[in-house]
Length: 137
Image (cartoon, rainbow, N blue to C red; front, top):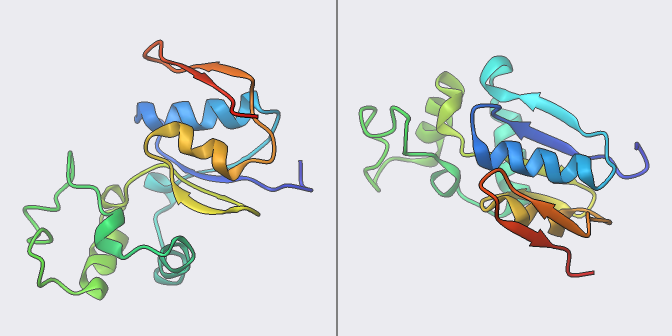
């Protein structure tokens, strides 16, 4: 549905990312799915996403299951540019899923945050873990 484009930066190994994608599909969208671990990131792309989200790179950096600690990125004195450099080198450092729609850009953790970015939502959705999400509309 190109009249309301939806893009999800997706990691298929992540339950939160899978749930967000499933909610988008259940709402009737045909999203552009970007497997960012496979295609990687560019500096302009990350800078645009962070600026549009109103978030610093550190706020979107994933620590769990990544080399963030080994790379010294958890030190608060590390500059944003260095974090972005590391994210380009190690795409797993970017937390997921990030969803882009005409309503904005958000890191959708928990996955139901994606519903804030859609102009329609499934009435009821059951996440992988059995949690039931009910639309507020």
